[in-house]
Length: 253
Ligand SMILES: [Zn+2]
Ligand SMILES: [Zn+2]
Image (tube, rainbow, N blue to C red; front, side, top):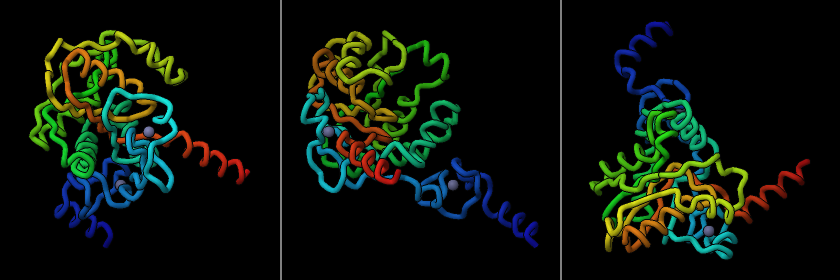
């Protein structure tokens, strides 16, 4: 009996309805290519820093990072926290070359765009570039696929004019100020190319914000952009939230 039902299911619901995360077939889902069960593992942002968009607890205000540092972008927002399903999808997308995942990720970005920037006048979408060497290794620039998808969905033109000209070892172990120093002269863009424009800068993850801030600085100082807003699929927790979570974990032990 199960065999027959499975066959009928196959006829009625062909391969398009296979969840790209868990591999299960599903009938309906709120998001293309991801089943509702997996979607339950997205940690959407309930509270976040009013400037950088990092996850906060209970109140929406400026996070302690933004109290201490000045970022060149005007605003940054994300779909959710870099954990659970979003982390899974980004890792699969970026490092396992699962490019079909750009579809559900773009849909999520479009929802966040609508939620946070619906009132904003955005003239152009710009993707965070990767260096030619990394592009050759990976075969694609994940941020460009996401930005391109969002451009198609919103009708806002895409630009890939920002180039990464210098590549260095991963920056995980560096503090914010060091990262900023290392990132200097890593990107290039034509003088005045975005004169007076409002830019939406798209990337997969917002971590320290050093990269997005450096590109935003360049977009304003060199390319002549007026405002730069950032949109990413995932973000991290604000420093005070990380500390609090750490304390809770310590208590358990
Ligand atoms: Zn699933
Ligand atoms: Zn902040």
